[in-house]
Image 1: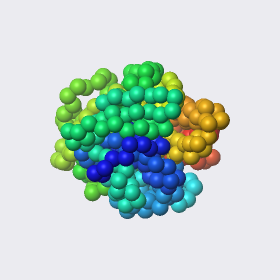
Image 2 (image 1 turned 180 degrees about the vertical axis):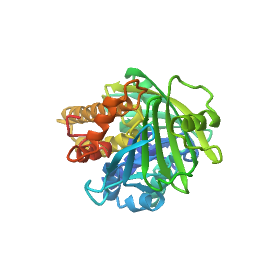
Image 3 (image 1 turned 135 degrees about the vertical axis):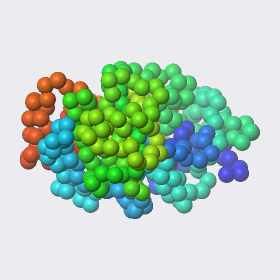
Image 4 (image 1 turned 90 degrees about the vertical axis):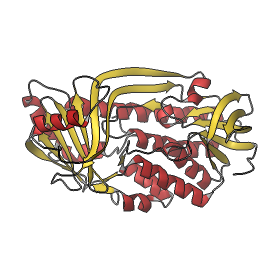
Length: 388
């Protein structure tokens, strides 16, 4: 992009998975836009893995779902254990087809595929090495000043969308609060070569000492997630592998790992998500627990809804406030549901001294007809419509 136009209908700050997908949606809607991303390339690392069926349906609308399915792993079953005793299996087989599975794909591959799709449609909309400095809003437009490869630029747009993550500059400059709470739950996770017999299935171990999750990854790797008593600042392979062995007797000592990290859990929401001509989407607008893998998918649902909303709002000077207010209410409802579902997952995985009742509850959840409801909840069905 040698000559940067000075005006757009929409400016997007942040070219991660949500910003890139929003760009694809705006391209489809024939809305002029630019994406300003400070990084020179997609951030490396596996990070968020799960692409839920609701997101694959969104990708299918853009004719890009097959690209992700080709590179990912289809998770069609999840095996549930109490400690090492298998209680049952939750299958997604009877969920709505064709996407009756959760797709596991490292986030850097997801971002690369989204960028490739965007570049194929319009190579002049994603501007990398573009760091936003100041944002100034008036009644008619938003002005964004940014540095690009050592040069200063300024553009104007009718709307500014912050897709710039948890520490959003857009949110801070707009003076929007980020309200919520920290949960007491802490975890460690790592990606290892797969030495289990689970293949493309997931496994959940509800241990007396806390949750262990195990998910397949491409290239014969597997993600392990463990509940810990406290936050561990500098986690080691030994800490993860010893905990897995002590709780379920599975040895990872001879495997290779590509990532080890620790994390805490928060629930945060921007108040408001829409302020005049500034709109927040994805992690800039809300944070829910990563247990359940909803966060990135929730951002894509935001983006699709926002693209439809902007198509109605642009050029409509009479009902735009009402339309944007309705958009915000829909997104708040979806975030509330996602938070409830994540909290349910966390509660099931906490350390417990009387496991009898949990065993009875999980056994009930894995039997029809409740098992079908649980399969739909775990695949994010109804997240925008259901009461939970």
